[in-house]
Structure formats: C-alpha cells, structure tokens
Image (cartoon, rainbow, N blue to C red):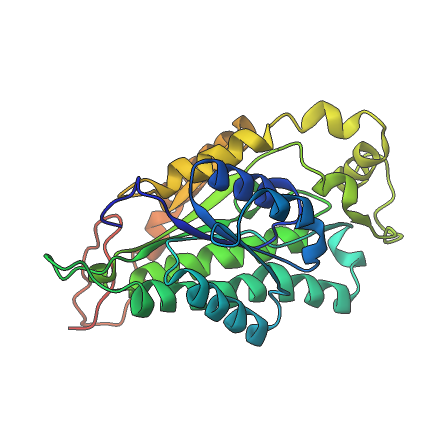
Length: 313
C-alpha cells in the first residue's frame, strides 16, 4: 500500500472473541474502519453501539461456505469501496489423539480451518487486485495485506491437536504457493502469523474427544496434553501470551511495506521455528550424498543455489 500508516479498511473473520475480536477493537481505536465477520453477529452488539456504521460493519459469515464469503466481500466493498487488510482468523480445534478422530469431524475442521481460509484468501486477492485499483503516478497496484492466522503447531505439531496442525500447515503452503504466482506489480503481501501460547478463550472452549484405547498410557504426550487441559491451573500456567498485545502486532504488521512471509510470535514459537530450521538443514547436509547418483544417464545436472526456483526454459 502506498500509504501504510493511513486509515485502513479491515476485513476480519472470526471476530467473536480472542485475537479476532481484539484486533477489531484495536483497529477501531486506531481510527481504521472494520468489517467484522462471525457466525453470530449478535455477539458484537455492544461494540456496534460504540461506533457508527461508517466505521464498523458487522456481517454474519460461515467461512466454509464459499458463497457466503463472496457475499461478505461484496457487501464490504459496497460499504467502504475497498479493503486494505484481511485478517484470516476464523477457526477452532478439538483435543484428541489423531487416530481417534472420526473422519466426519476431521473433515469438518478442514472445512473451516483450511478450506474456509482458502475461500477468504481467494476473495481477498481478487479484491486487492481488481477493486483497490492502481496508484495514479506509478501505475502500481494499491494492493493489500493478507494476514493468515496460522499456529506454531504448523511448524511443530502438538500431540493432541494434529488435525488442526495439519490444516494450518496446509494453509501456510497455500499461502507460499500464492506468493509464487502473484504479480509483484499487484502489491499484494501475504504473511502467516504463527502464535504460540496465548491466553484466549479458545483452549477453554475447545472440545475434548474420547481417547482411542491405544492412547491412554500416562506416559504418552497426548495423554499428558489431555491432563493439562483437565487441570484447573494447567492452561493458566502455560498460556502466557497476551492476546491484546498480539492484536496490536497485527496493526504493526499491516503497516509494513515489506512484511515477512512468516511471523512466529511467543518464545515457544521462536524455539519451534529455530528447531525446525536447524533440523532440516542438518538432514539435508547429512543425506545430500544420496542425491549424487539418482539422475538419468547422460544428462547435465544443474546446480541449484539455496532458494533458487525451478523454471522451464
């Protein structure tokens, strides 16, 4: 965006509570306008009473419905003329060993956490490119910022929430893929936020599924994870991140001209990302020689630099 610090129009999914709600409130306090979407708009009645319609538009939205997502973006554009920042935040999770999750529940989670986020991603990019227009002098796209609420579990899966981690990892890969395809002239930037242990209502509101018979030993990580949630002080003890401060970081991130593709936030996330990176590099170095003799006879093998993309020529 040409003027990152000017008043913005936000589109936020999952606005009923937690980081979504707090980001809506922070953006409004900062003077921005917000389209707050959630399944039950009545939850935000008190907030609506504080702000005029030209600052806050509350819309019902189930992100797993592509038609609802399209309609919500259309209403947002009709109301404000543009959208500058999308916080793709809607989601939920349950606690269970992966083997014990019924297929219908696993698919339902992916419908929201991955496919719902994918629906929002596609509409956000379309609006950033086709609706927001171009800068008069440079002809460059005004573009927009897409903030994907991921999780540190996308990098380091947590026993007890594997399907959630898989859905978030899929969202990160989708985001990386879009980034390779977008024309830089559109000025669309995508960032995946990887929060660690933040003290929101999500842990307390999560559903705990019955354990699979094979995963009941007290020594297993998934059993210990269940015990943590069942302990009255367990969540309070480890969920040390302040979600209001994370919401403020969303505003800061939206102001960056060149935002990071990934933003781990919280000590546990930083440690997870560092460990993942070090582990991958160690494995590559240890087994690099296994690729020495896997090529067709007589072909010239190109040497690729780190980060170099494969392209047909």
